Amino acid sequence: MQAPRGTRDLFGEELQSIRHVMRRMEEVFKRYGYEEIETPIFEHLELFTKKSGSSVVRQLYAFKDKSSRDLALRPEITAPVARVYIQRLRSRPKPVKLYYFGSCFRYEEPQSKRWRQFLQSGAEILGTADPAADAEIAALTGHVMEDLGFADFELRLGHIRLLRELLSHAGVKGEAQDPILRAVDSKEEKRISEEIGRAGIKPAEEKLFRELISLRGEVSILEQAAPLLRKIPRATAALQNLRAIIGYLPSLGVKNFSLDLGIARGLDYYTDFVFEAYLGGVQVAGGGRYDELVEQLGGEPTPAVGVAFGIDRIAQTLLERGMVPLRDRLDCLVLPVNEEVRAEAMRVVTELRRAGLAADIDLVGRKFTKAMEYANAIGVKRVVVVGPKELKQGRVILKDMITGEQEVVPREELPRALKSEA
Image (cartoon, rainbow, N blue to C red; front, side, top):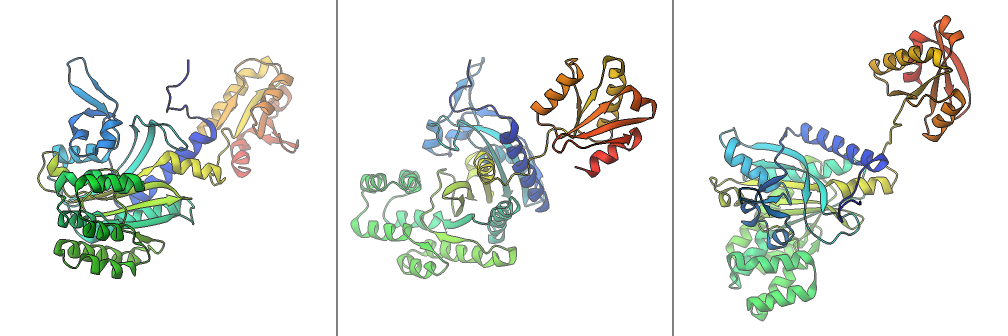
């Protein structure tokens, strides 16, 4: 038997890296005042088919339960958070700030750092349209990357409203825009051309659209975007919104960012500000404003903005770069020299565990020589040897398995000795 394709078993350094990422992320989320939320792994299918985007819908793990209800494993967690907000949190003081961790599932072709079951984390702000909220989400994303030790991450900002208003001006409105935006998100030139042609956009409008999505670089590119949009009032307002968000970033400590007006995102519910974070050219986070999602799911109109992180990709990058502070599984292994002192060795290991140390004992009943070989095999750095002579003196032997040095330590001093050498 093997694990299903697109899934993996996690243990050792790989799992340690993932847990390290989750701990650091949670610390940052809490510093920004977010409250943790957890949603079910499966939801009603309709939650995701309403506005998640056709590419996500095609990748759903959907099924009927024993009562013939249409359900699906969650492909992302923003829509479930919006559902919880509608059901249970809408009367809370605004804004409502939430963070989450959880497994998501998409039936897509497995490739490097992409899995059919993957871990996602994220943060959402619901109940405010203030550009300061958008700026905070971008700042939080940068803060997470910095806190994990990445000095080379890229934060790229855009505004999907600019694209939507330009498409509306060209006669492509509502959901008819979504295939074009998904093509832009794919960055496949052939696909973009096909969707533009299918929508019947005139050459002059196509030229404007292509000029807009090609704008990338410093804040100064907004001066190039303004003339392209001057005849479209709502696009001009979106440009001002983007300027306002950027204006808050220095105060929030964000310096490392660029603009990319071709960011379209792969989910159809984004309405305005959008952004993505990259490591070595690989996208590891993304988000933006989704002011219509709560209403589309049956709630009252509620502005919202958020970000989602790909934990697996981030953790793998940390491992590849040797940036994970990997902790030894054990502080020590306790070994009795013979069967007569085994019960007392068990008492020693219990004392160490209760003192907050990670301690283990041979549970196979090996002879002492074989037990020492086992200690070498599992890579433990220190062994506590429990012998009858030392026990009578209230002592044990602490052996360093790397240097071979050993010392006799009073039993009551053993926890302190192990902690001081950690």
